Length: 528
Figure (cartoon, rainbow, N blue to C red):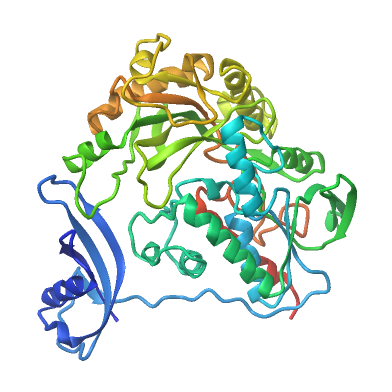
């Protein structure tokens, strides 16, 4: 295969057109190309009067001998394939958690001939969706089944962004291919900024479960791990709380810990049982919400561009006070959602459907916090820092899971908002007009004010007075790192911490890839 990159293509281009452009770049006829596959497709909107795609393709030719190689035309690199050796074990390995990490780890274990048991503290995705919808409508939180807990993990109720900063290799390719097999659009294999959308994620999660079960895996929902039975620093069993509240034990010598960044009670159990945990920097802030038409105009030069969907953005600034701020998890054509998982605490997040066709755009506007910001050196101090902010938000919002909200213009001028303007907040159950400074620490608030002004210089309209801030956003990443060694295990042998909750990933793709790597480490530890 030959790889041809930097192919400039019009927004109307289909694969046939792109194939012709690739042939022209190689100075051959399109008939000489036997096979053409899109590898990457990105929008270039730097010049508003010349918005186009930049593509990379891999082609198989009738004759490669006369092709002149240069920086844009070169032999396609060999692709490694993710495979695991077949193994057997007396006790089935256990996967704790069924988010992206747990699903891909469970799938890999079944393909290795093992029959893992997947434990999920929440409910299956169908019932979970009903529970989440009920919370958004009524404000009645179910601590068993919510945006954080349940089959599919927190990523199920998000934009489903799959772009990642980690290396593109056999692990990331395996993740994307499994997602496509489960019902994701095939375009995620080549788009520079792939996304799935909540509406498609729910179906995908169910299809992955069916595949795991067909290969011999087993799911147990509403089964929460409450402790670990240990002998000589080696895992022997898991203590479980069943749906009816009764306690049980499951014999287990190999467990993948895929609990996500919000399993705070499990963090405390791990700490109490001597599992080594370290503090980790993360970020906190608020969701900022604009009209999607404003973002489109800022990025594309007009409110709507044919063949392009809702525009996105990614901003970062370094400020004179030494802190940095950035946008994260930007959801074009989406909404801000209630993402609480603990009683008496308010949390926000963002989500979009695949079509990204709602009126507003939103993103997390975050400030980095380090261990120096925490109240102590305790390994869980960052978690307690998050909780304190969420508790203040609950009180400021009215004690009913309404989120505190403030217009950007009022926030910048340090005054409470009296009414909303052009941007109508999308958060449900509802918002309460408040001062964000009553929720976030002063140094975070002041950094956000400075960041909004600086970001407006990069994205015109970002500081528009009618934009809405909804707080707080505290769950962008885990506040801890569960230490693991070169074999992938914690100091409790047999326990394999991985993914975002353990502090080793930062999104759906990287988390799922880490699940595959951890499954590989577990399989390699087994005797032939």
